[in-house]
Amino acid sequence: MAAVEQVEVELKFDVDAGHTAPDLRVLPGVVGAAAPETVNLDATYFDTENLDLAGNRITMRRRTGGHDSGWHLKQPTGIAGARRELQVRFDDAPADGDVPDDLITPVVALTRTRKLIPVAAVSTTRTITTLLGADGRPVAEFAEDLVTAQSLLPGGHFQEWAEWEFELLGTEAHPRLLKAAEKLLRAGGGRTASSASKLARAIGSTPSVSEPHLGKRPTALELVITDIAIHRNSLISYDPLVRVDADDAVHQMRVACRRLRSVFSGFPSVLDATRTAHLSTELQLLARILGDARDSEVQLAIDDSLLRAENASPELIAALAGAETAIHDRAIRAAHAAMNSDRYFALLDAIDEMIASPPPGPDADLDAVVAVDKAIAKSRKSIRKAQSTLSTLTEGSAEWTEQMHTIRKKAKRLRYSTDAAEPLARKRYRKVAKVAKAIQSALGDVNDAQINRHRLAEIAASGTVSAADMFVLGRIDARQEADIERAIATYRRVAKDL
Image 1 (cartoon, one colour):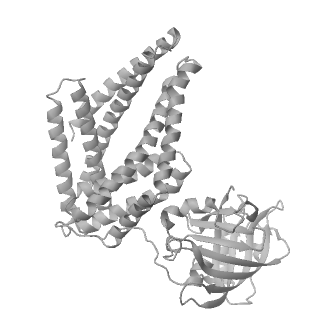
Image 2: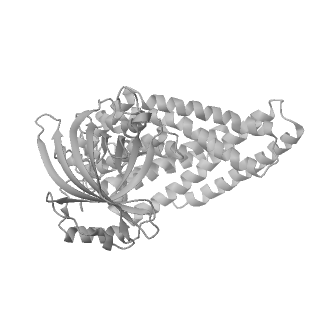
Image 3: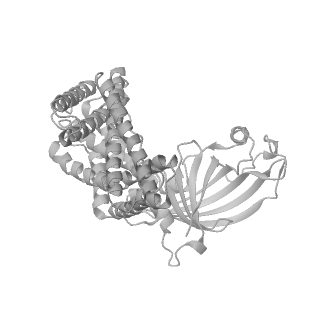
């Protein structure tokens, strides 16, 4: 069952029942209107007992009547007045009346193991007027709604009200149409809507999730919890994209896991370490599972770039890319299995609990700037110690290679610690972050090229490669070797600034 996706851009107003709407044909880009049509809409809204969807400004409903009967999921887009809507028609929905999987997947990181239940029943008598442009195409739709709603929550009550909705249609609408419509409808009796949606008005106030932010003089605990909330939101936002294997989604979700762990390791005394240890372990496991899929994605991209300029045979292409594709597919299936487990949902619950009720550590009341300075100094000292050890090792040896990998991980930890301080807007932190990122990037290139050279050597030693392909492998290996030398030179140059 494939969901149909669209972005709706609309205005909503409260209005007195029976109030006559102004003539919308005076709006820019509008030259006419179709005859009004009245329809009856009956919708049941679904959410968890905790109202996890409503709290995140998401609505899920099953609606009959009108031209778009079916299941609908509406999510915020970050653009005022715009919402992303997924629709599954009844013909494509489960025959047993269950919520379609296509609508559960985008929100399962919020609902988790909690059951979706009916929370409101809303009936609407809607009179629709379609506004037409110069070529006769619909450019907007104006709806005059008489609404009756019954909250199905404990203690819920019955309500009646009237409202106007003005929605743009397609991409043909006049660029000033929405702004002009708002001005006209307000002048004609429309008032600022008391709720963002019919559901919100039907069930009343909900525990809305707000964007994390800091005050002017935050404590270390406030900074850390704000950072945890930011990365928690990032993890949640990439969850549905990983489930459909969207481009770069695995990488970004893995980064969110690592950034969360870096908060615990970078500021170990700000939160109670006994409470964060389990979370850190669980995040490490999740990052490792996602890492298998991410590593294969990186390798596929490298293989593509290396083979692009070479006259490689189909057999060599299959040896390099074909096997990696199979590895990637297995890794994605493993990631999906982990993300559907009770263990994963318990991890998300634990992160939410920590944000809501953070367990303070001995440095919780430190000034945030003092805590960041302390974390950065500790991380820089650790990197310099690792660099000192590197200087005693034979370049190119296994020990030297492993130490370079250690420095890369420490530079990444330093970068994440400085990123946590971004809300403090200190230039000195951004400078350190820039150097840490450059070190991480250069040594990451070294690591990727070394892994690839090992793979090339294995293929060459297999005895199944033709003479022509052996030549291609040699050319690729030489390019990788040169890439390693350039990356090491870059590392040595930027490491001086740490």
